[in-house]
Amino acid sequence: GWPLDKPEPTRVELPGLPSAAVCLAFRPNAKSLEFVLGMRDGSLFFVDGSGSKQVKPDHRGAVKQALYSSDGKSLVTAGADGQLIWRDAATRRITQAVKAHDTEISRLLLSADGRQLISGDWNGVLKIWDMATRQSQREFHQPEAVSGLGWVGKELVSGSWDGSLHGWEVSSGRCLRTFATGQPIHDLTCDARAPRVATVSLDQMVRVWDWPDSTSH
Image (cartoon, rainbow, N blue to C red; front, top):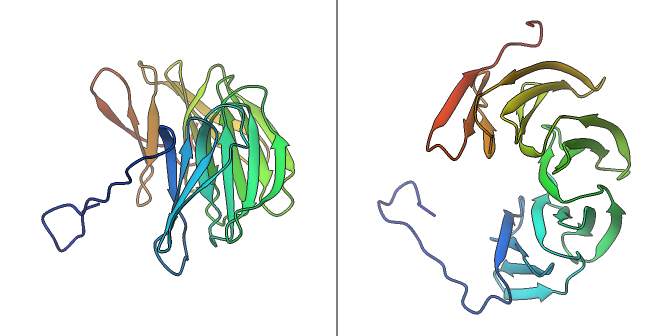
């Protein structure tokens, strides 16, 4: 990490990890620095001020995504097994496990208000979950794997392995727009200050797209 007031990074090494780390997430609103690593063997590796602790595998296969709720009270992990697992962030115990997808979950994203969770998989299926009830509210489909998720205002943006970008109206499930970028999308991010989306591909290019507002076609 690079502190803003220092020119050199602060490096922290964790020797002897039990498996290769696939993903990580920092816990918001924690009393001290706390984060979790999702491991290739399906286990979780927690690090905080008191040290580190490994939690046995609950996913069959790798933990592909990890995400804390906005208030830092819950942790959601998504696996290669298609499961979503909710945990109490303080006790780290499972509160609910759901077979959410038929294939590997590739992306997780929270809504701005933290009330909804979006999951996407390698079959191009996106699901909207209520974070309070842990119930699926609706389902969208795109042609190929979900390779990126973000928000432009209230519009959900998803990237696809076939190079297409999709804009979704979450409340209705309606696809507002779809356009081709010309390259398979490996990830995307959205500008919080302006309607713009940036995508990356394997051709060593970053592409920035002006995103229409919700009234445009």
